[in-house]
Length: 479
Ligand SMILES: Nc1ncnc2c1ncn2[C@@H]1O[C@H](COP(=O)(O)OP(=O)(O)OP(=O)(O)O)[C@@H](O)[C@H]1O
Image (cartoon, rainbow, N blue to C red; front, side, top):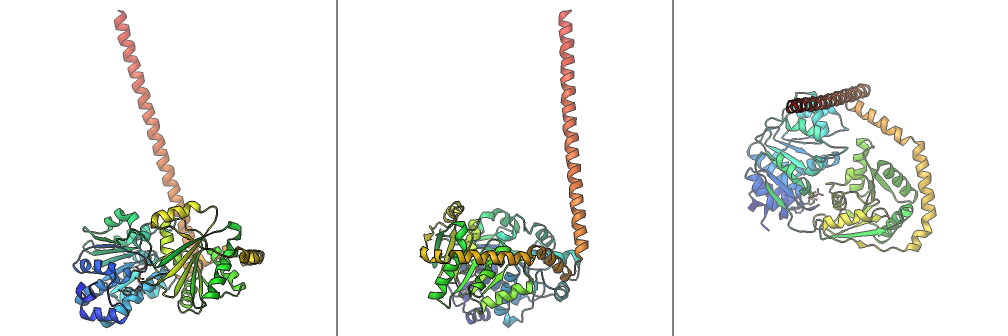
């Protein structure tokens, strides 16, 4: 495969890439860097861990070196941790340029970010919510001259649902120029291809990994059929097994809710498995600290919700365990993609209960691969079953006593204060917004009602007119 220089990158940039271990471009880099350098919009759909980040960082840095000014490039990504990770790649690869970047994410000081933005950094890496807040509340910076708009995990940014970014993306797209280059990347682009294409201003160059199998070959994908009520005992047994056989291995465990994440973290500590949790109910500083301790192998076990499912690049992760079967195949693809990255091997085990069989079939259909059964010693699991369930109950009671749910509300309020917002004002704003929405709905319903009544009236009049005409005709015929 051609070297980076042959892709059109300047010697200094190819050398910088080499210095950080990128000697030969990966398939998605070899495919997308040339058209990006030629000024085309690009969409890259490549497997997890295949170097999509550098596929947009390198061409952006190349173009920036030819015309250095700020704000040159805006990168949007769905989570705060990913924003920091992308910024790190820009800093490492852009070091010879003296790159100035600015990270704009929630949970951090908004005033400091506004100050940094006003200094016109070359590259802004942001989560949509916080950037939209800045655009709504201040005019101390402009995105009018950006050359590149990059959407990392693009399909997640455009996903509709409870935590969708739609309104924020509308604000941001209104603030960027039409004559820009748009680069879109993800491991699961295809489902939202049309919406994504509408984002690209001109006919985008589209590249998709040719392999039919959607997950990497180096990934050993297993399942474990377990009854729902003994799932935790299997989890503890799996961790014990891996830690006995490979004490240097790092394990990422995914679960569905913040509460479950918290309880499992408490449980594992009681079984002397030092672990850290990562979920959206934690304060931002706690999230960063947990990730740093896991990345540096101070802790070998990370329990996370799907806030950590996409993009996180932690080379030491050898095992991914799905404590719950992901509801969507693409969530599965991203979760298990946290291991077996950049050509390394890894194993992913999904705990499948009697209620999840259909989910496994949907996953296998999407990834075009059959999961193999992972065998364990049932006896060993039964031996710890009671103890695990007792410990879980103790942790649940302890968590309830700590008013975890109430904390969620308090956390939200604290977060707003930290971000310079007034929680009561926000509460009032939300109530007013809800009232306006209710009134609008009532108005629409009454209009619809009136139209229906009017239509019925018109139909009735027409029928009466037709009846009267028939009566007149009948009367004439009688004469
Ligand atoms: N050409 C290359 N040669 C060697 N290593 C590379 C190369 N490109 C990227 N890498 C390394 O591969 C790892 C994965 O890269 P990256 O995080 O960009 O993958 P990705 O495709 O974005 O994954 P995901 O879909 O999970 O976000 C990183 O550690 C990165 O430094």
